[in-house]
Every structure is written in structure tokens, then in C-alpha cells.
Length: 102
Length: 172
Image 1 (cartoon, rainbow over the protein chains, first blue to last red):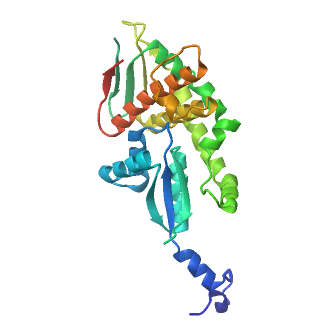
Image 2: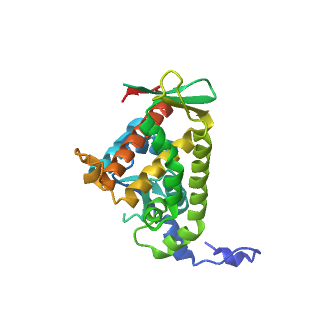
Image 3: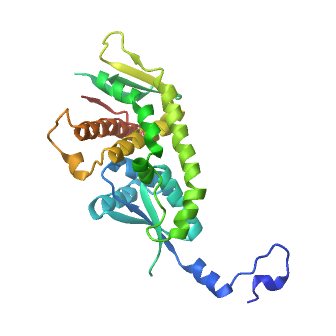
């Protein structure tokens, strides 16, 4: 495959193809962490709103947060993970993103 | 006993009625508490880092994302502050206050109530043990803060139920 910079097109930035591919193909996990203040039904509602999950799935994740301290609520590309963490912070949930180890 | 009720009056308005004098005072104090969001205690909680280990991403986040988040929180607080000016005592029962606001403000109310609860928790170092405490000492600021977090949380719970399609009512 030809690196994009070889096209000579204006505005195309040369990137190390191998590193970029590895970066893009590594999924990121979005994690919601437990805190003693956020209400259980509020967390469920937020997971339904942000991810569009059905109530049963959102409730299961909420219970995982409550009982185990954290729940992996989504995995995928970095940009989308950032978007979701931003939204979760907007609802005042404790959320982080981390590179998947698998 | 006062019946606390949250209901959709019509397609455009929500009414909260049966608010006790104590809850009414707590609601009126919300704007003042929300002003503490940028303090050293509350800001760490309201504007958390997006990663636990990546300093570069965290720094970029603080510069790029947190200002937008702050704007969102402030806007919600301003909407609720304006709505609160319309809170009235019920003429038939001066202990029962009520407030009506636009259905479009429901998300702002939930945000402001939760911000207030989180700020109180951070300022008073409230942890899980404090939240589960059964005894109450009105002279202890930490106990009073936990009570406020619970009562405002109860109102938030009812708003979430309304959002879920239920018309919650209860007696407190």
C-alpha cells in the first residue's frame, strides 16, 4: 500500500504508517467508576441516554459499577471513546478511557 | 405529612408540589453552592481526567474539553436559578411550596441537583460510610451535608422517574 504522502496531494500529512495503523486498530475501553453520590437510577438513565442501551443492559452495567467498582461500558475507536467520556463527564459520572490490553 | 409530587402539567410544563419548607430552603441555596464548583475540592470531581495514566491526554483534556464542560454546568445552574425565583408557597398550606418550570429545563434541573450533591460531598469529604450513617447530629456540618445530599438526591430520583415515564409522588 502506498503511504498517503506519496500521493503528493496538498494538505495530506505524512504519518508513520505502521505506527498509525497500530494506533488506530487498538481499541479503547470506556470505563465508568463507582462513586458514593451518584444515584443508581440516574447512572442507568445516563447509560441509556449516552449509548442508547436498553434499560436491562444499562441496569446490568450500573450494578457492575455499584458492586465491583467499575464497568467496561463500551469499546472501540479512540475518537469515539473520547466523545463518550466527554458525554459521561457532562452527566457528572466518573468515567475514563484506557487502551484495551487484548 | 406533605405529599411531594412531580407531574407533567401539560406538554410544556412540569410542576413540583408539596415541597417542605426545608427542601425549599435547600433548593434556594443551590445557586450559592454551585458557585463552589471551581474550588479546589469540587473541581477535581466535576472536571475529572479522562485517563488514569496518560498525562498528555489529561493535559489536552483540561485545556480543550473542561471549559466546554464548565459552560454546560454553569448554563444548567443559571436555568435552575431563574426557575427558582418562581417558587411559591401554597396558599392553602404555607408549609407546602411548589414550582413550575418548562419541560425543556428538566435536564438542567437534574444536572444542577447532581452538581450540588457532588460539590457538597467534596467540600465536606463525604464518603460511603457517611452516606450510610443512621445517626444524625444537627451540630455536625458533615451530617447536615449528608442529609442535604440525600434529600436533594430524593428529588433527583423523582425527576429520573419522571424521565422514565412515571409520575412519581410520595409522602415525606
